[in-house]
Image (cartoon, rainbow, N blue to C red):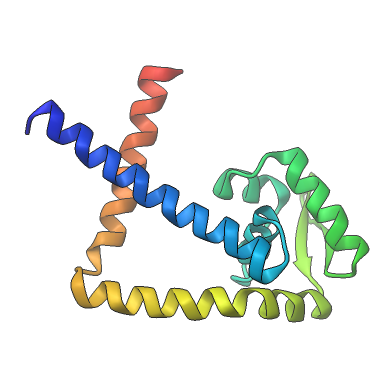
Length: 150
């Protein structure tokens, strides 16, 4: 494969990623009435798993200070609580309250509906492995950036 073709593939991937990110950002603000980072926090917490500020920052690439501000806002609104984790001194578990779960359901429902439609149509045209392949590409790109840019 020639260098020009590789550049074109990368350009197409970047445009697709920018389109997806832009959609979430725009719709979060315009239709859901929340910031993109608030949407990401709700999305992260909605999986029912244990999350800390550190884990969300690392997985979702939200700056720690930004996430801390959003967590404080959500805590003040009664949407979440911070709970200690046995054996961990510094990290706290972030938990949605019942009010927070209702808020998350309300804000995330239109996104989930659109995602269901999009993934259904995509899987009619693509193999389900495309998701795994995209994850593999992400890991390779992360390794390459660390090797060449750090």
